[in-house]
Image 1 (spheres, rainbow, N blue to C red):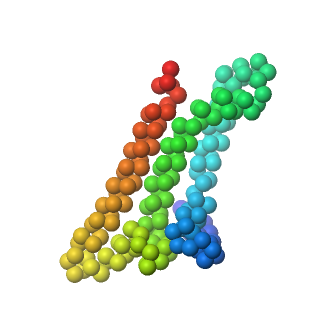
Image 2: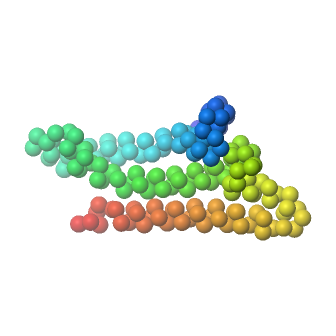
Image 3: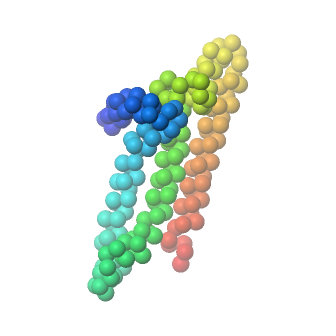
Length: 165
C-alpha cells in the first residue's frame, strides 16, 4: 500500500509538466512507464543474480570467456523469457491503470476518447437505463487485457529455454 501512495503522489507531481509537454495519451504513457519499470528491473536483477551462480556460467568463467560474452551468450537468453512475460503483464496493467486514471479524471482529459473517459461519461447514461454505454468499453478493456495476458503466456511457452532442448 505504501508504494501505491508514493506512486500516486509522484504521479500528481509529474502529471502537470509532462502532460503539458507531451500531451494527453503520450504523457500518460510516459508517466506510467516511468512509474512501473521498477518491478521489471527487480525481476531482471534477480534473474541475473541467480544465473550468475549457475554451473554453466562458472564453467564459462573458468574457460576464460569474457564477461560480456557470458552475459550475451548464456545469461541473457535464459533471462529473456521472464522479462518478456513481465513486460506483457505490465502492458496489460498499464491499460487498466490508464483506464482507471481517465475514469477518475486524472488521466487523459475528456475530448480525447479513451476507455476510461467512455466509462466516466457512461455513468450518467446508466442511470437512464443505457447500460450498453458502459458495457462495451468495459468489455473492450477486459478483452484487450485478457488477450495481452494470453500473448504473454504463449510467448513464455514458446521461448522457454528448457523446452528448446
